[in-house]
Image (cartoon, rainbow, N blue to C red):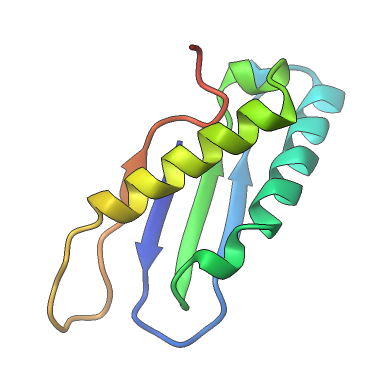
Amino acid sequence: MVHLRLTGTDDPSLVGFVVSRSVGGSVVRNRVERRLRHLVAARVDALPRGAHLVVRASPAAATATSQELGSDLDSALRAAVRLRPERSGGQGRPATSAPAVGAER
C-alpha cells in the first residue's frame, strides 16, 4: 500500500517504508526494505515536489520477485496519484491510499 500526501511546497519529496513483522523475520524485513528502497529511488523523480510517500509492504513482498515488486509499486503509485483529490489553495492535499505493494495475486 502506498500513501501519498502533497504538501504544496517546493521541498524535496520524502519517502518512508513500513515493513511489519508479518512480512517475516528481521533479515527478511531488511531485505524487502532494501529492495523497495532501490525501486523507489528509480521512481522518486516522477513524484511531485514536496510529496510525502509512505510505502507499506504486504507479507507477500517477502517472496515476490523484484519485477513483481516493481510492477506492484508502479500500479500503486499510479492509483495514488489518480485518486488524490484536486483542491484549489489550502495547505496541501489529504493523503490517499492505493493497493498494497507485494499484494497477493
